[in-house]
Length: 167
Image (cartoon, rainbow, N blue to C red; front, side):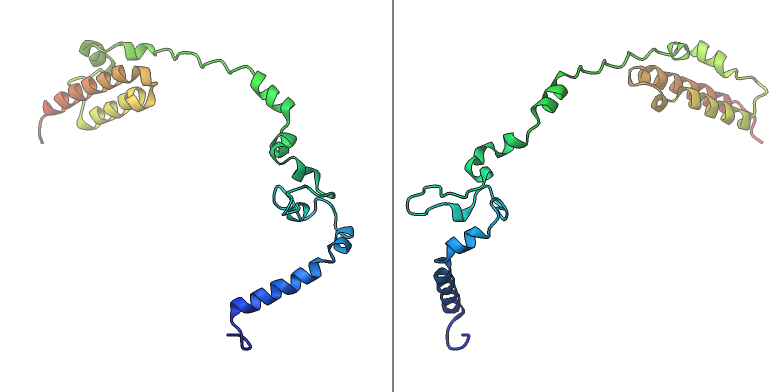
């Protein structure tokens, strides 16, 4: 209770006092800029509530609520975007020649494993082969071949490491 009345009662009294000052709306409308302060699509003060008639002094945007979007739409720019030709698809990637060689003999010839190779040289050959042939480094279409080449190279290098003399 504020000053002997509830909050609700004080709000009602304030609204009644504002209604009495609204009778002087004609004087206020003369100082009002049309369209200014209409944050919504229409102006609340522009409608006669009982008759639902639109009063004079209504902003242009509030008379054509459904047209607000189309007024701001640049049809020429939209047409230019629609007429723009689609970009040509990228050309099909061409498989590198070395990915076509998937026979174990061809991969062994590339690795050039010799009896004199040590564990260090074999590891270097594995890294160099992986750098050139790893499936993550080639196009999606050629990953199966790259994966097969890596598996065969790893098998050949692992076999060569097993044959090394143990010290």
